[in-house]
Length: 382
Ligand code: MRU
Image (cartoon, rainbow, N blue to C red; front, side, top):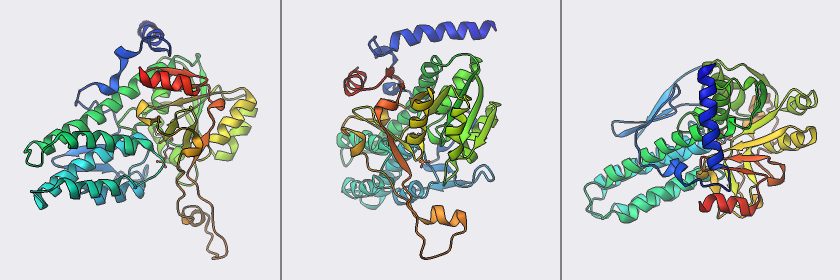
């Protein structure tokens, strides 16, 4: 008990300093220069001996297979195929992919390696359209590339250093997000989450699951409900698996049961991650999130979005400007055993929750309650 009390005190101090409107500059973890990667139990992405090791998330929790990738086209395909998924994890993976590309292009075109590398990077940027973290991470790597001379023998080492900083910075950001988000929860809260915004979807620790983990450690979470999350079942396969490893009580429900659960007054908070937050506070996340937000508003359940600032896209004015990925109809029809060529399927894999339905956006720089364009701009300017 004593330890929990102490933690809560430390947390309250941090929280009051970084709540939007207070000075947040000393908490800008993402810009930290550490490359020390503080892994927890799950390691979705690892740089090993010149190659990229990815935990193949398509087969979890039944199989823990890994892929070792050595080129940008291989990594781009792995992102498209959902070997690695979750917006921050996709960004980190892309950063390491640029290192792989630089290694190969330097060997193949020592005199002019940057142009073929840029061609591959453009292809990498198209691997999935909605998660802005992919573009954010690529831009960080392009900035390094612009400062590197063609004959620079340290080019790969410089790029690798930045990729590791992005990776380590994401984990550190998630721990801060976890602490800030946990401050909103009362003791014994019941949380509903959607998709997987855990260690698997990030560098480690997780965003929405990071908040749940931090709050659980403070004795504030009694129970988690994890939406199954059709059609890839990220909630049933990945979130439930991660929470089980933490010993956090979890029940899986079909996506359609979530509003009934709220009507039964069994949920205090809906907590989700995000793939892109527009400048006005609109939030793109896994398909079904919007329905949760509407139901939460109707039933007086609070709605939290937990995401690093790398997910906030100031160049995307509103949710209407966010490209929504549509995936193959087979992802829905094959699972249902539908074989008729007459029947197709509409398969958008993200939706947009208007800012007006969001109670709080929690980032590593601070929090935004009742988000609007001015508050988002102030947080990002800090
Ligand atoms: O299609 P996915 O599995 O990549 O979708 C992932 C999500 O929608 C997550 O909720 C989001 O990326 C936040 S992850 C911290």
